[in-house]
Amino acid sequence: MKHFATAIALGTLLFTPAFAQDQAMVSYATELEYDDVTFGLESAITDRGLVVDHISHVGEMLERTRVDVGSEVVLFDRADVYSFCSAKLSRQVMEADPMNITFCPYDIFVAQRPGEDSVTIGFRSFPEGEMQIIQNLLDEIAREAIEE
Image (cartoon, rainbow, N blue to C red; front, side, top):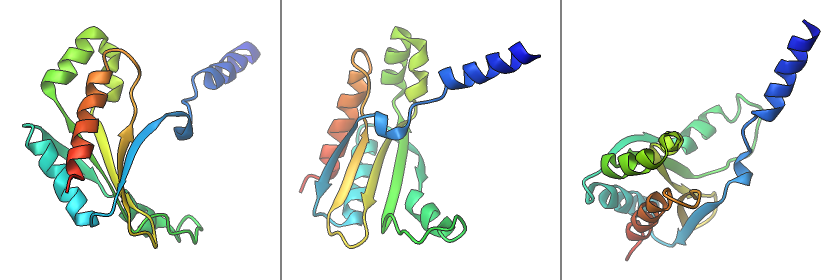
């Protein structure tokens, strides 16, 4: 039993996921209004024949639960994450490596910090290799969303 507990503890240490700050991010700041950025993002996604699967209202959730978790910090005025997928590109990257499933669906966030006029749009960067086609897609979408 002692060896079993040691093995479980060691396995937990070895397979603990990396913290968010360890993963690179691509982001762009704009002076456009928040609603204009989200409209531009939705348009850039759907204009490519893609479907927004889900919109996570992260900013609302964090504000709604702020007092419950004992915090006084307001992180965002508004923050949403748009999730979507491309059947064609997802198949392409998963045929190269089925474990690329871990990256699907693809997410682009839009956020505005309290007291700031600028809005940030961005996404997690992807590893070198076949996933760069997805990074390029997300980069095109994010840039198009904030074109004036």
